[in-house]
Length: 263
Ligand SMILES: [Zn+2]
Image 1 (cartoon, rainbow, N blue to C red):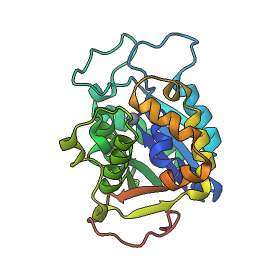
Image 2: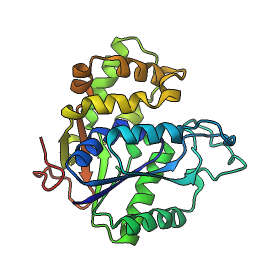
Image 3: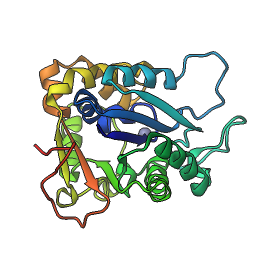
Image 4: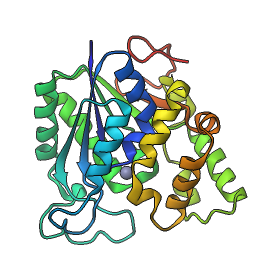
């Protein structure tokens, strides 16, 4: 039995980028832990109110995840402006990398982690908290001596196809075309392609658990609502694969081994 620790920026990232993989790894008898850097909230957190961390715990339970931890940071937001810290928490992007990596490394040691799931150097689409996950994850793996770091990503061409689909459906979504051409990873860099179609039902239910996101406003929320209402087979076709770059490899696609079989 191996222990896999998945490090994420915000509640809901665990589903979209790695949900099927986590469900599959858990179903195969391995121990799975989610560590989330931020609680997904940009403001102060009011005592006793339901939070996105509660939604994350529900999602994690659906995926069969054994433990969920929050590193204690606030969401840094994704606009042009980086706002001051809320009174009760530091924004993750402003966290001292060494300190944040120390917190994660302590969990990696406690769990005797075999594999750390983190993010690619672009932080996928460039959210400042996702870029920070890459930095903190890389350093924490060094500190804790975890040799296997797999960075969750998406083939860039698949992202471009998705954007075309969203456009065709006339869903309003603001994005920067130039930034997109440098987002995620070229297909040639991807080392692990995980088939998670058998776990589509769990992945879709876990996504639906993020109710404040699904019921939110804006283009992303609209896409989430469409996704959670799709017939499960269609959901599986769209989100039935997950991709990783092995941080230790040169960008050459190799057959995946061990608990992350390819195909
Ligand atoms: Zn995120």
